[in-house]
Amino acid sequence: MKFGIVVFPGSNCDQDMVHVLQEVMDADVIELWHKDHDLHGLGKGDCVIIPGGFSYGDYLRCGAIARFSPIMKSVIEFAENGGYVFGICNGFQVLCESGLLPGALLRNNNQLFICQNQYLRVETTNSAITRNCQKGQVLNVPIAHAEGRYYADEKTLLEMEMNDQIIFRYCDKEGNVNDQTNPNGAINGIAGICNKQRNVFGMMPHPERASEAVLGNTDGRILFESILEILTQV
Image 1 (tube, rainbow, N blue to C red):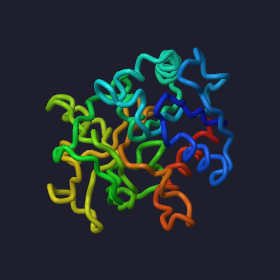
Image 2: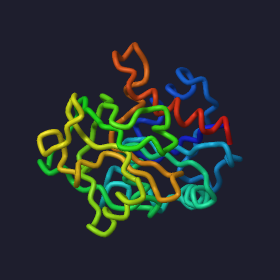
Image 3: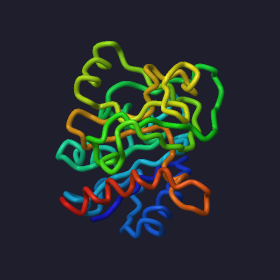
């Protein structure tokens, strides 16, 4: 059981992820450079993580250039063969640009970069990253993005609702979801989703920044505990 962390030019959360997985969760980790043409032996029972940052300086659309890095061909094949892939912030953008997740991430509705703690409501426990949560549970997880406004067309949204693909919504401390609790204008308050096959996940908030007591917040740790539990059973 290993985690492979993809590093692009401009990734800036890769070492945070390495630290949490290695030092906090006691997991095996390898770093995957964007020019690599394979996943260095990762296979069934492993997970690829695409961390946050500003891949390729966020030129064009966020994640649009990273999608064409050599490593992504292997990541796409890995996902299509059932491997677990988890994209956070810029990683979520890359997964949408790659077609591994539906929809797109657009500029925040206030046209500003937003960096703050943000409450999230768990919408489903039928995912590898929320299986240890409770439906309706509220987590406090930091966000830091300028293009985090999730969008999908009406047909796609309906399919996602029917398939239970919406994992997180932005909310307040009590779990209320409305325009006032939505920091970036994401459609239907969506903060995280999965694919139909339930092996690819994306979220804008940063659970790796809320996974150890020294930071004063451990709400994000449960997501890593959940996927570790799944991987040990594969």
